[in-house]
Image (cartoon, rainbow, N blue to C red; front, side):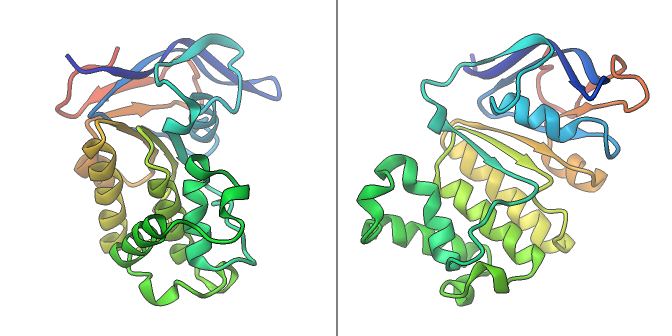
Length: 228
């Protein structure tokens, strides 16, 4: 039986007196790739941030079954890169939870730098390693943010439209890496996506949010076990 990573029961999310989601039940287990779909403003980002523990639901609750917060990693829609730092140092920020800020002031451990550079190579950014993040295109920055989160080695990987600025080939490459890396660690992925082809190709289950009716969410299985 697969281990549960995170679960939500009766989840109700609200922003400025407007309900986004009501009554959502969701359980995510190891091996699951869950896509969150819906129009802009339907609550995809709010749901992800609630699952990450950054926001508190108005109704219901979220239970994270992982042993420590560092086992959850998120790729934010605004990316949150250090624009005045090099690409490789941005990626290395993903390992701070293992070593701490003070221990890396002088130099990141060799094995972490090697892993960071491996990710940059896989994501087609090896030649950008020493550039400032501010010099990159939006799509390149998205790939740097993905590398940083993967270096964190999360069991639960949350991603807010992580490939929205990438061409189809790179989008598929990044999503494939996110899925395979998480699953190698017996983890799972929850990813907000707007592209139906990507949802069909990568997701086991899709949570569809309804902007007009917050209680009209639905969960479609695309071949995996039902999550509710």
